[in-house]
Image (cartoon, rainbow, N blue to C red; front, side, top):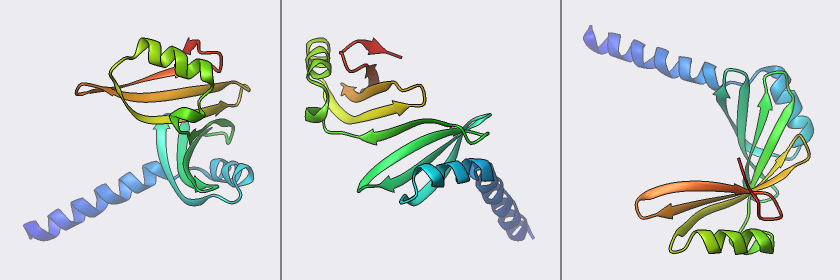
Length: 139
């Protein structure tokens, strides 16, 4: 009996987790309109009113965030460090010596802004910093 109860509880937890990450139709419709060729789409709930899709697009692993109304908020796509604007590389290198770069991404926002994210490891701590194209640190 305990075994059956455990299986039922595990199934309910799995179903609840799936239901929470399933995006509303307005969000999935907006996503497919913006990224019609996206593959392997997986949804996560990012906050009370925001969803994030992780997906393959143009040969890259990308992510895009949408409000629950279907409004596109931002898209993050991977870059190599050498593909960053020169000023961003210069500023990062001058302020973050002896760190290991973990990941680099370009973030296009719905407001027309472009940000660059550099995730790095400093000892055992992993951190991230964001820059505008001119090398100014932004949030």
